[in-house]
Amino acid sequence: MLFKTFSAAVFGIDAYLVETEVDVVPAYEGHFTVVGLPDIAVKESRERIRAALRNCGFDFPSGHAVTINLAPADIRKEGSAFDLPMALGLAGCQGSFFGKVLDTHVFLGELSLDGGVRSVRGALSAALAARERGIKNVVVPEANAREAAVVEGIRVFGVKSLPQAVDLINAPESFQPVTVDTSQMLTEASQYSVDLRDVRGQLSAKRALEVACAGSHNILLIGPPGAGKTMLAKRIPTILPPMSLEEAIETTRIHSVAGVLEDSRGLVGTRPYRSPHHTISDAGLIGGGAIPRPGEVSLGHNGVVFLDELPEFQRNVLEVMRQPLEDGRRCNDQVSC
Image (tube, rainbow, N blue to C red; front, side, top):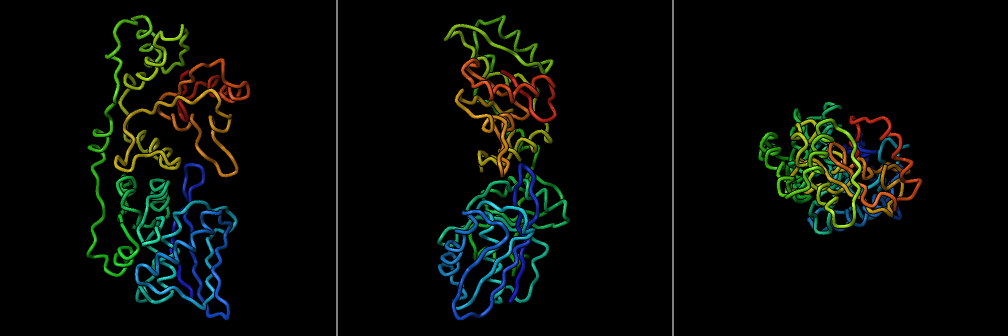
């Protein structure tokens, strides 16, 4: 029997929909195969899915050949967010959804062995991708619900466990979508732990920071150890203009994909401050790789990147910074050093 569900995968900071096709047929020797260029985390999902189904009271198709295809099959898939849609596909093959077709839902979630649904990366990007494809319902782990609910025009449901996800499909009227007040979220998240007003003295340095921030200029801080360069740099975001909702969503997408977003906040409301160590590689600073990952410059988008002990950085690392510094563009990354 064949059953299909939808999920999403992240490439860079953007997401694209993935069709999860689950096929279960009787076989003399059962096997569990995942195809569609899965990485190690996706391949290992068969053990998590098998334990989660059994511990939640669902039957695992023993004595059957299980084949799961993640389409499009020519793009590499990574991460544990496919656990939930694959488990639901197996449950659907066994008639758990009474013939329902799940083409109006996108599912994301990592399964624990007891059937719990753990948080994943990139929930906000996945919600945006679902809206672009016209899919109105997004089911994510409860920890990611506020993050995904920032996207308007879709209904976001947070689930704690695999049985709860099954109940959501069979009895959707008993569940309410998660709603958030984005303005209030942004206000609550826009509180800094430090402030430039805490600095006593340093009048010339503070004046220079104010001029640089007003004109979106880069700034070079020179002085002996202990002069307060790092202390002042940490407080630069506090005198930048407040983040708009559009900027907050852009920044949240990057932090969510990188796995550094605080689940309880759901939205990044303060301008980022990133201070990478001088031993960082060029890929760690700018990002990239076979599967693109955000670097420190991307994580500092709409905020500040502070290169402490600038002469200690390797030459090739500084060279990759030359282009954005020469262009002076803020549309992708604002860089201060």
